[in-house]
Length: 351
Image (cartoon, rainbow, N blue to C red; front, side):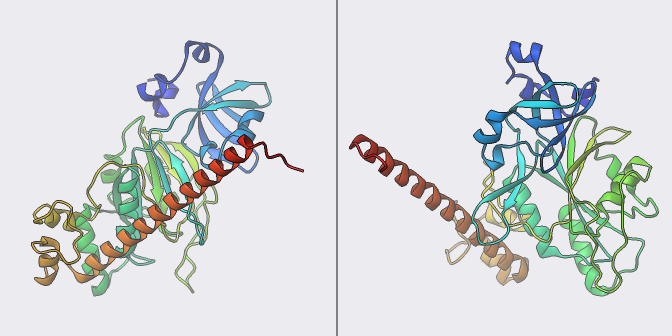
């Protein structure tokens, strides 16, 4: 297997290239995005690249190279010039922080996301549900990890701990002493890409180190006073594992703002709710007040927790708000373009 295939190259990307591009351009994958350049891995090594002039001014923010993107570049010795960003197979995104209703792409072209929580900071089921829903929206398969299981667990956490294992097939590990790292290793396949997601301090970099059997990534301890991790990882970086697989480490995230995503799947991402929703009387049931709603029935009978149901409804409202706001913004843009076009037709000129 050549370097490109180990990096995740496939027929999906190859089919988009012209013969001229194959002969005259170098194919590479973006491993790190810096403020003014991009670190690109290719068949013959690593190259620091910049965007071609037409791309600097011609691409929107989300069209610019992200960690995980495939690009074509020309080698000019000290640096490369990126001439094209290839179409993405998929990407992981979230709503931008703050009041702006806009999508922020985090990484692209990933097969699975390794979602990490840990006993030291505490397990958070609502946070996990939010993350799973957004991964579902983006068409990315989750692998749930509970790290730092070398620590003791109290009764409150035990219930959540057991639920995560039962519902999400969570793998319980300890990166510190290597416990069950082999179970996670079995999930990692050569040529496939995995992005790590989790709050600061849950041990994402330590897990990559454990998988690779070395101390390549810098890690820092949890602050004893606040039980929060410092942001050791400050960029999104792509790494090879010696045993195969591509890891993308990311800075700790407090929360994923939901977007509508790109998945065509009509399920919700909530395993329990989806199971009951299949039995609802109406195929487009909103699970709010319809007769014959099996989700509401399950909540009433205690088969589904009220907390899970309320979070499901909350996240649905959030996605609907994002979608309606996005459509409204696009419509305003179309209306403005139409006004400008009509003004030009009428002979209006700036003075």
